[in-house]
Image 1 (cartoon, rainbow, N blue to C red):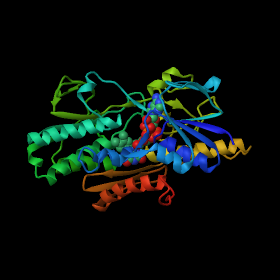
Image 2 (cartoon, rainbow, N blue to C red):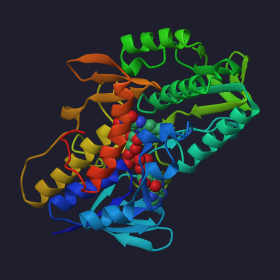
Image 3 (cartoon, helix red, strand yellow):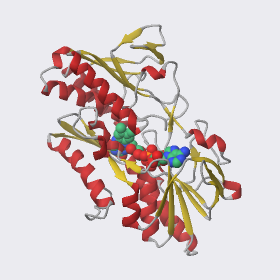
Image 4 (tube, rainbow, N blue to C red):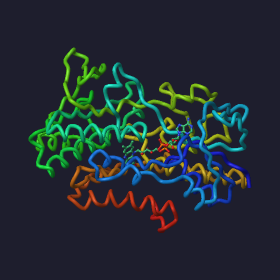
Length: 388
Ligand SMILES: Cc1cc2nc3c(=O)[nH]c(=O)nc-3n(C[C@H](O)[C@H](O)[C@H](O)COP(=O)(O)OP(=O)(O)OC[C@H]3O[C@@H](n4cnc5c(N)ncnc54)[C@H](O)[C@@H]3O)c2cc1C
């Protein structure tokens, strides 16, 4: 069987590795860290409901369970026309098939260093936690959370974790009987943030913000940040002791050092079989790709896994001379269990249906349970539930 190189040891890369190994391929993964960071459950680090280690899954352990090779190195370039990529320490490596799963990057804003994002480097979540701890010690303060999209690409937005962050902070303060000592603020440039989750959900959020006394500032472009300030397009400013901000998203910066086809915002252009346009032996999956499909499409962990499994299937088919192919567009849907601190909202969208189901209490614990399920099932300690 041919050897497949996978770049990136996140949710997409690991799913591709597991599926390719199940199909008998020889697999090697390159990642710049030795753990998979389970982003969806990192939302509980700032409220100290999860420790950093709870959110990390050792790539060595995964490699041993599934029988793939794994090296820690930095991918610094890809030359698809020569079927090779470059690593910072090991130099140039040739491949027969390549699966690229390096995730995305974020847009820059003036003064962005005055904010911290829950959607950036894993260690940034610890900075958020420590800053919240300081404010708790201080006995009060003003915490702002917000997100923005990429003005030229509807793929470039991730707002869910911003909602989850502020709802969880609200809930933690309530439990500590300190809610009245803190002012919570939520900001976004859209008139109605959360539209991708559905119109009803977006309206429900506005009602919920009012109910739990989180001040909202919507509909003004964010032009930058200064110390303890969020700067808006009309010259107005919002002040905060701490700002958690998820910038609009774009393609991985390393791709500028590649000959791969990129969208205007730098994501890899792929066909529906997850092949990089123009390269039959290069597949790209997860957050690094430019997704096609309906306006509400989102780059999610769940879609990253669908794409990874499809890529593995399609490589297997090509190798076996079969015409069978799997398209991610046919499986495009959104499944989001949005945590609200002490409950959650299950949101589902596909081409035919759209619904949201409030899940008081049990939903919160179901999402926490998913984290445990993800870890154990990927380590082969419990069976996989199809689609989960
Ligand atoms: C806070 C948060 C909450 C979320 N909640 C949900 C949720 O509830 N449901 C859901 O479906 N999705 C959720 N998501 C989205 C989901 O986590 C992502 O869609 C998913 O992680 C994408 O997986 P990926 O493998 O494409 O990218 P990543 O998870 O970003 O993995 C990329 C990998 O590539 C490695 N890498 C990057 N650059 C290099 C390089 N140059 N060289 C070597 N290695 C490199 C990184 O170390 C990493 O291992 C959430 C995301 C965040 C941040």
